[in-house]
Image 1 (cartoon, rainbow, N blue to C red):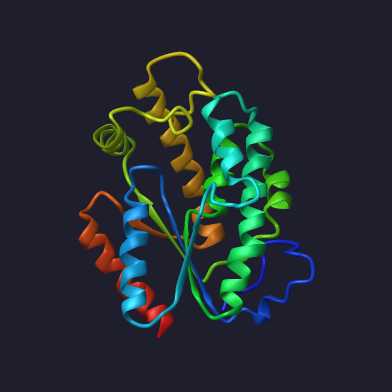
Image 2 (tube, rainbow, N blue to C red):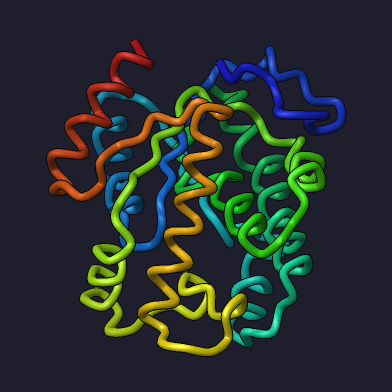
Length: 227
């Protein structure tokens, strides 16, 4: 079961009464994260494990509003962080906790670590972020798909024919070549993930390999966890 919360937790929540499993797959856009979530969900359900998947901007409360606001490219770093924190809190209370209570496997397509890394690169204070995300449950496993920034850029170009404004950190560095800004920004994000790796006990996975090879590694580790 999840080992409690990172801080104060949700008011009135007993983490001991959550027998399900919370499994997080982290990584940037282009890391293959969503593909792995889909493969894992299908495999787990074939094996008889009920699953729920969650991710960024999926809150019924603010998910659509956050997506709309980001299209305008005008959010300040503090506002962006608080918007994402609201999105996360709503999903935690209304999707993650009920699913864990019902013994589901919750697959999180990113969690608080991406949100913290993004905020730190934008100048947020670590102590403030720890307070903001102190409600978060400690997952049973966190897998971080590490992919080189230039490979991420190539994958995003192949998929979308362009780079995302936010994933390129253009709100941080508003001038210059978007490709080079993307690579520079993703390197900064990866530095933050390396700093968090030991603190939050990530299992870093080489994401430069084929999806099927990565899936076999993840499925084996998750199988041992569930059994």
